[in-house]
Length: 463
Image (cartoon, rainbow, N blue to C red; front, side, top):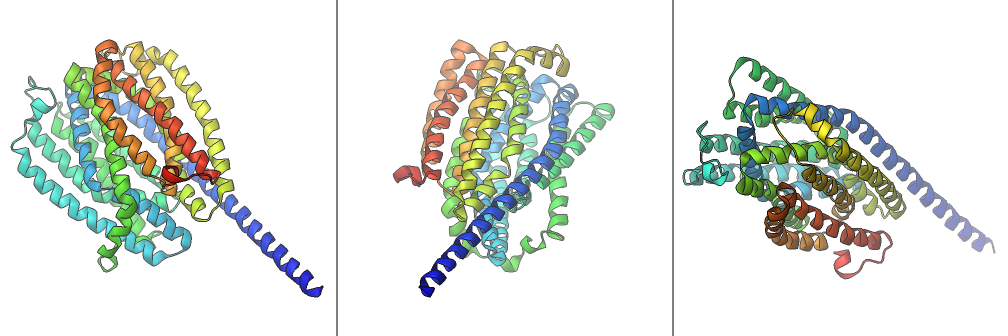
């Protein structure tokens, strides 16, 4: 009898201890997320205000055609993200897991190895681009045959050089996010944006419009800020994670790529899905119409930016909770996110109806944005944010196979569908293609997330 009582006491104590542990972990997760969301709102809010000031300032510094060329050129260069081969996102998950398990040595090795791999890729990429750039006609690629300003091939070299440097330097953002310090990423971006807009403002006062100077300001300044932030953080509060040659272990590459390789293919799909729009608009309607398209996109992306601030800490938090099998917290977090999504839909509709006034006071009367284009952007915001909720959970838990298949499928559909719809709806038709695809993906991913948190996912739903 005494033994039975003792056994029951041990079971009760163990259950109480386990419940208390989960309770305090939930409170800690909730506190970290609230803190990151509040601080991110502050810093990201500054970035959003500055980015909206930056667009008319930039257009006035050059002209709508040159600004359209910059948007198209940067979109093409973004395709070089393919060569990341998913290492950044692979690092985010592996670092989050190592941090959750308290394995600092493994965490530092993951960080150092990723830095080394991306540095090698960046150097090779730049050298290969220099060779092939002599055979490219950027005026033809960007449908700017009549443009007689700065040599676009030389401008492209500068853009790619900054991009390859950013390849490595921006890893500080991954480290901060994976260690539940997403607000610091927003702070870095805010400082970069503030410095950029200051430089652009000075350029408008002391120089004439120049694509070279524009590229140095828009690409070089944020890169410099990230470099300074990396040095400061890795030499102080994040010294435990600082990269070092003695911690580089290429044997860890397979672990980074085991998940990173799938992330890479998903990145390819997502990049094609999002960035081909600018190329399609440029080819069908010209660089000046791309400026119109980009103005509408930037206006509605305000809502996406705010929603991203809220979502940003959740990737690492989902990884942490899933590693610890804390499904109760995951369910509550998802429920809150869908309530926020309702607010996103309401804000999108409000912005749609006041958008003519927004464009007039923000950009002026030189650029006319059709209401149908704004309507397509409104639907896009709702669809995209719906997908974002599910993808953060799927990415954090490593359930990527279905996401991979859908992104690869939709990339094959998007371009012909966008061209087809553009014939009937003009600029809005290009975005309507994204709307159809994102709503379809949102439904499928929502079903997968429900299966995962209810522990009923099998087969493709659980891979």
